Length: 168
Image (cartoon, rainbow, N blue to C red; front, top):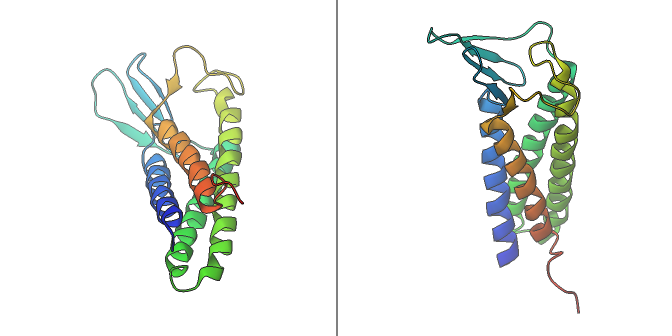
């Protein structure tokens, strides 16, 4: 196992942590007008004028956000298997090829989720349009963690594929 594989594994692990953290919190879209609103992929939490927080799952669940959730979960699974294969590549170098491909699949799934998620901005609670949030709503820390996981996955894949090095 070379240094680039170790760096790639560490970056994949960081991306995995950020992706899991993004799904753990319902802070994908937030607003502070008339109380606090935290909208997640599958859950919404409201705090109205200092009262206790109320969390609920909207009915029906947005299909776009459900598909985003599924893509992120499968991306996390691919990253976890990639980490296992990177560890196994210490003894059997041939599995590195499969680790690279699974990392690539995770990257594609995260990119797909990033494209699908903004389609759901037209929900009644938000009042925006696809790919355009109204001024009283903004992306939250969960979305920022997800985008960070996406970029770290891309960089990890570059290290795993050794694209950064010139081939002589």
